[in-house]
Length: 116
Length: 116
Image (cartoon, rainbow over all chains, first blue to last red; front, side, top):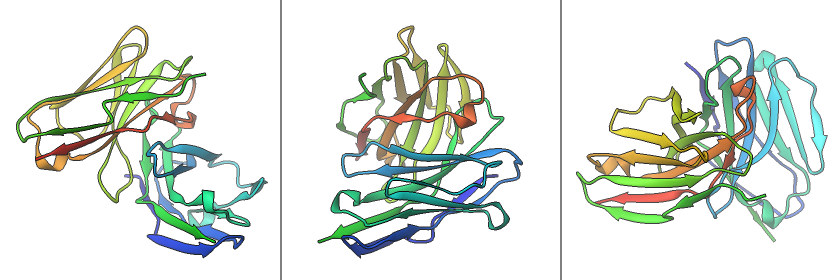
């Protein structure tokens, strides 16, 4: 069975600080996809990034970067120079590559509070 | 391009009643999936519809059922409501093609159901 663990329940930072959100996953699949979604107070989940299990190249996209390490089953997400608008709940999610449906397994989320 | 819209946004039911939640998918998307998000938890996959048929289901009892219509909109029906059904119900649409696991889902803002 697939499992995603986000050990950080809540993080508070001051604006302009960098913050890293941790994600550890479990799967028996050799091919899979990892996602980060953001859930602002309005409720809808907003897609941030996707990675497939064969691509361990870490990238930076604007203020976002991610660190995918297959050896430790971790997919951490960093926001550089955080802003108040980044305040939200962030979810890490995992899906099978060969499944018949877009079935995401989510972690329990990390609530990020950015203050002035 | 319109996003995913859900109705109603909030509703209150009593135990044993039935409820129908509605979802209009994003323009151009042909696949709809439903997730249940209990308070403080990550979303859990209920089922997915593609071409008006259910093509994937999570660990939910048969009293959770759905429909997809020719215009790709969808309904989630829950019979014999229980207190534990109180949650935010999220609808997500995607363009179903190739590897489902890779699909990026576009979520609606959800319908918050309270069962008394």
